[in-house]
Amino acid sequence: MQKCYRGVVIRGESTGTKLGFPTANIALEDVNISGTYAGTVVVDDILYEAGIYANQRRNILETHILDFSGDLYGKTITVTLHEKIRNDEEFINKKILSKTIANDILRVREYFDKP
Image (cartoon, rainbow, N blue to C red):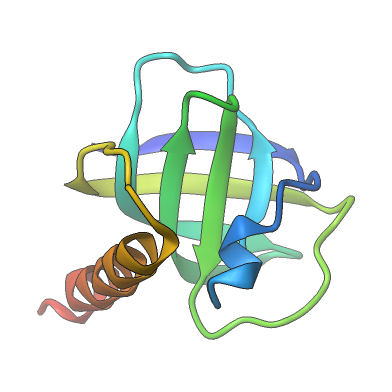
């Protein structure tokens, strides 16, 4: 399963940044996806591995690009979903959310480390 999305990076609520997992967000119009995925992001013709969350409540695709730092606001990026790693769920507090995201990132890394 690979689905591709392209868009201009927009500002979000900075929740991921506050938890230590900054994201580059693009608008999401596809109502048929939800949850967290292992995927890739192309920025300036460079391919990066990423953890990607399809946020249907806010209609955005949130991408945490692994081992990346930099300002992407206003840049056009291409996001490709490779494999779903977790269904969407609600969290009762930020500590549990942060632990879950950290586990998601480990699973994304494992996905890309597969032979």
